[in-house]
Amino acid sequence: MSRAASVLHVSQSLLSRQMQSLEKDLGVLLFVRSDKGVKLTPAGQTLLDRSYGIIKQVSQLEEELGHYANEPKGELRIGLPPSLFDLVSVPLVYEYCTSYPEVKLTLHEGISTWLHEAVLTGRLHTALVSDAEPLGLLISRPVLVEQLFFVGSFKEGLRSDRAVSAEALSDRRLVLTTEPNAIRKIVDTAMQKSTQKSKPIMETNSSRMLLELVAQGQGCTVLPYSAIALAYEDKRVTISPVKDLFVTWTLITPRDQNLSLAGHKFYKNLTQICRKQIEAGKWLGAQYL
Figure 1 (cartoon, rainbow, N blue to C red):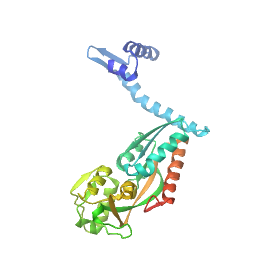
Figure 2: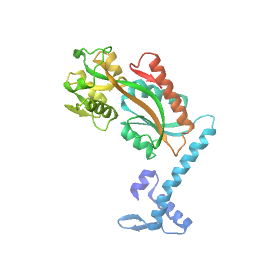
Figure 3: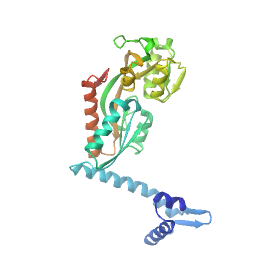
Figure 4: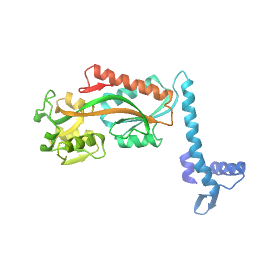
């Protein structure tokens, strides 16, 4: 009881009175109280189970009614891949929050597998993921396709105008993202087609860690340009495009839940930011869809 009261930011006595009031209104015993704490009765468990669905329906209703509003309001939970942090995520969140101050925006960074699951389970309203994930149970809106680059230290002397094959990667010391990262899936699939197998000397789920290791000459890696833009501009790394190796970024939403007005505005801002960065020449190897 004391922990629950602390989470709810109310006094324990007030919480106890509210629980008793709820039991009186419903005419059933919801809680079994003892020296060891409080447990739910069968009636209490039934109420709890049904409450989840009711709360979700109320949330969906609020989002649907939001379509009739002139300005977006409410909550929007979004997911973006870490590789887009510099080119997309930072300017996108700044512009969105400035334009729509009535929206409570929550941003989660994660690999496509996690973001995909979070949208399916309702933890996120929408997310940008790789199309390497299964999209059959979701509504998908392709946003852009991005070239993957072989990345080495400045001493490697790689050239952005000279492509390398996926097969050639097998001869290099590789530091790669961990499975089931979307980029790792694409790299492994391409190398398997050429009868090779990736054998990284190290794996990490942090693109920033990969870049730092590569810049220090510890190995080479494969990443989209969005993940290496600043390091490349600062001449800390050199790059070469990998032949026929691309990642397509797609915005996903649940099939059983309409995207709110706040979500549609987010999608519009996202596509505008991507198009702007590509047209300005800041995003090598990217093509807007």
